[in-house]
Length: 357
Ligand SMILES: Cc1cc2nc3c(=O)[nH]c(=O)nc-3n(C[C@H](O)[C@H](O)[C@H](O)COP(=O)(O)OP(=O)(O)OC[C@H]3O[C@@H](n4cnc5c(N)ncnc54)[C@H](O)[C@@H]3O)c2cc1C
Ligand code: FES
Image (cartoon, rainbow, N blue to C red; front, side, top):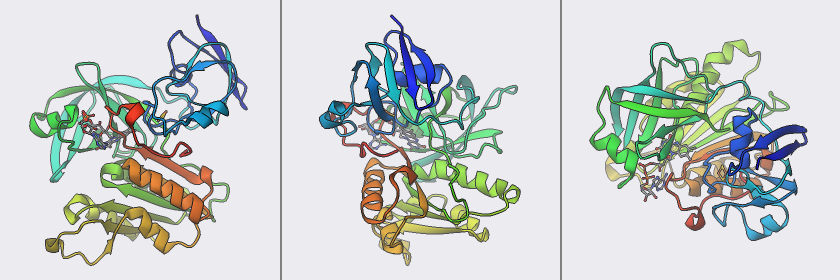
C-alpha cells in the first residue's frame, strides 16, 4: 500500500510506493532532499520523523545511533514508510528541474595520471547532453545490477565529454576492470546526475569565504565546482575568497597539482597542497601532515566560512568534528561528499559523523 508523506516545513506532499525509501519516493516525485552515499553510511540524508512509523532499514550504527532513533531521527535513504508520515528536513531547490537519466556512453579516453588514478572521459550519444550541477556524481551501472558512484570532474559548461577520476581499489569490481581491461570505445551505462554536493549561496556573499578540502580523488567534484566558478566569475559583481587544500600521500598522488596551481591566476583563489607521506625522491618543501590539520593550523576561526569537503570518510569526519568543535564553523556551513565504498556493509561501516550535512 502506498503511503502519503508530508515534508515540513515546505508542506510538500508525496506518495511512497510499497517498499520505496523516503528518499527514492522524493526523488521520483521531483523533490531533492540532501543525500550522499544512499547506502546508510554517510548520514547526510538524516531528518526527523515527526509523525508515523518507518522501517529504519540497513544502516551504519555510527550514521544513525540508537539514541538518535529514539529522538525521532531517521536516514531517509534507508527508511521505508510503514504508515503515512510527516517528516522534517531541508529541501534543495537547486536541482529541481534537472532530470535524472539513465544513458549509455562510450569510453573516449583513458589517462593514467597517477599510479592508481585513471581519468576516464566518456562520450554521450550525439543527441544527448547531461544537465548537472557542478559537484554532482553519476552511478555507473554494472552488468550484474551493482552500481558504482563517481563524481563528475568536468564543469557543466564543458560537457562534450564527462570526466571521472577513478582510484584503483584492489579487488574492486569496477576499478579493477577500469585499470586492467577497459578500452577506448567500450560502452557503459550510468544514471545521473545525483547528489547534493554543490556550491551554496551565502547569506553575505562578500563576507563568506570558502574552503575546499579534498583527499585523493575527492579533488574531482571540487575541480568541477572551481572550473565552473571561474567560468562564471565575470558574471558576478563580487568574488568570494576561495582556498583549496588538497591532501594526498605522495607528490605523485596529487595528480593534477599543476592545474590546481594554475588557477591561482585568479586573485581570489589559492592552493595549498599537503602530503602525508612524502617520499625522499619527492624533494617536498610544502606542507605535510593531515590535510584538515593544515586548515586548523591556518585558521583561528572559521566562523565566516563555508567548507566543502570531499574524499575519504575519515578525513571528512575529522574535518567536520574539528572545524565545528574547535574553529566555530557553523554546522550548516559544512557540506560533504563522502567517498564510501559502494560495497560497504552499513552495519560494519565506520563512516562519518551522523551530523554531517
Ligand atoms: C557519492 C560518491 C561519489 C564518489 N566519487 C568517487 C570518485 O569520483 N572517484 C573515486 O575514486 N571514488 C569515488 N567514490 C567511491 C567509489 O564509488 C567506491 O570506491 C567504489 O566502491 C569503487 O568501486 P569498486 O567496484 O572498484 O570497488 P568495490 O568492489 O566497491 O570494493 C572493493 C574493495 O575495495 C574497498 N573500497 C572500495 N572503495 C573504497 C573506498 N572509497 N575507500 C576505502 N575502501 C574502498 C572495498 O571495501 C572493498 O574491500 C564515490 C563514492 C560516493 C558514495
Ligand atoms: S545518503 Fe543516507 S546515509 Fe548517506
